[in-house]
Image: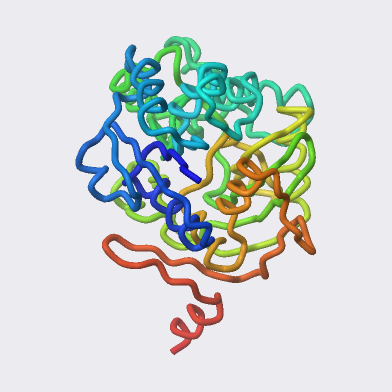
Length: 352
């Protein structure tokens, strides 16, 4: 088969490519990206330059590429491009190319983090209290409501885009300047500050039924000391970790955002000061960057995704929820191959 991958050469897509290679199906991987230099890093068989997904000519150029490269399946790995191809799904299908996307409304609701927050709040899903920031009056209200201890972020975008932790009332001017720096009035939110502990529950669904869901707890962000927020979107060390409260909150987040889930739903959660999970967002229609972690550990989600999308073949799993053992550790660094280990290996070094 021929699979077209967006964002080829970037870490999120390279890890999907490597997982597919690991699966051994022998597919031809076609890479596309708006950045020529990144394309040269891509683990693909063919490379094509396309405009950014927000460019006016992206739909036309993508359809030309579909005709020229004849893929059987298209998959992309960032929110902006997920939304772009979701909005083109009819044209993509008419071109004879398959996709494995959630419903169009679900994609729109998840890409806008405040829209998804409102759905969850009304449904009683545990979330961090959040308000939209349209102007300085809203920002002052947020400072009053959260006693100056809050979390600013953009409504759209990944990798902690626009994120800023605020520690007290005296930081109002800094917060205001931060929003202005990003031209963020009307596109930012303010939330109550939670603990730094974050968890991701990566799941795959087929026509309303859960195929598999696996929990990963982040131990640290890579390059965290280079950002004001301490969040980079680049997981440095992660571990497998199962938790019934996490699973319950993640399932509630998915099933309340879409009554018939289909495709990839990666639920991000943060632990509050009482130790309870709060849902912060769903990264929709795409795998998180460290999906190769699960593949190397024995749960190859991109291969399962491929088999369902192209062949309608569901996996035979003994366990749908957290099938991997706890305390497997994935360690990543720049210009270094990732390492799969056990938590005891790391703790043993610390003890020594």
